[in-house]
Length: 243
Image (cartoon, rainbow, N blue to C red; front, top):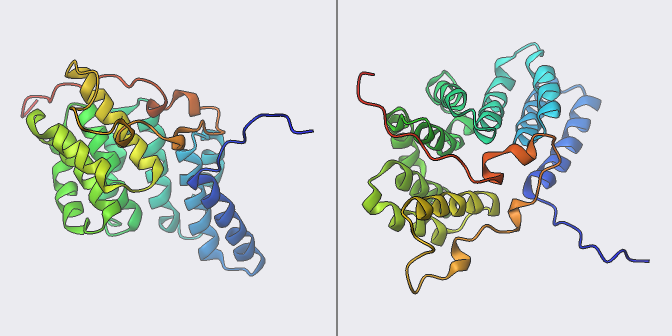
């Protein structure tokens, strides 16, 4: 008999994990070692997004033990940065993500896509200036709705308080994947709380900024501790130049 319990919708990360796991099996069966490394490192990143630190460590170790560790290092570095950011280790996240965007693999998709995470880590660490160079490159790349939404979120975080709300609302209006839309909603909500506001201005539909079903709890043991699963601590004030 049906239990009456609603089944949680499968997240995008879970769907990607299933597809990548199938691809990994094919690569292993056919001896395509380069793709084995790539897929294990990508699966490690997906484990990090879902808060499964144990699985991340296992896959990352396998990926980096290949004959060409650099092939797997970029996705692994982004995954470690996500784990650090999600667990509140913002200084560690900033250091790792900054190195990823400035290193020899700066052109890789992981180094470009991690820029919004770098911006958040920099702002939460009180050092927004450390994200400006990478974000300038990201802005030039952001020409489609998904990346435009993330670029607007970065502008809200890096710009003046007077322009922040306009940027957050532009990011929410642009749409994008549910997980990123929900993170933007959370950051906008944090900004509203710091501004002692109870909600968006009149005429703005609340559904544009409320977290969506993408906020389903991940399977990993660290998932409940992710910063986007709880009220995040207030970002530090920017540090004086030269300090």
